[in-house]
Length: 71
Image (cartoon, helix red, strand yellow):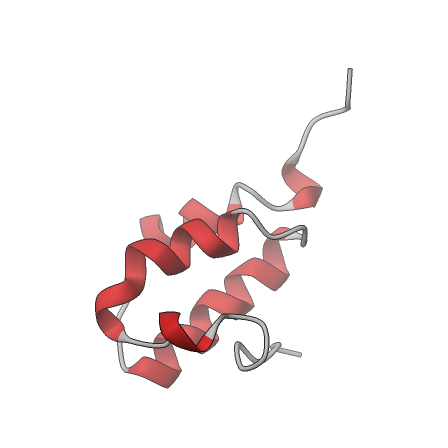
């Protein structure tokens, strides 16, 4: 089930020209990679932006399930 970007991504980032800020914002969230991709997908659909696979990977690789063991 996809999670809605509404209420998670700040309203001031809900504009097509804020993609870089949205990528940064989602990358810093504590969430697994699927949740982050769902948020980005929801944001893109809401604001009407088409994204590339590399843009999805930008947030996917910051997911908590992708982190290695802590030292």
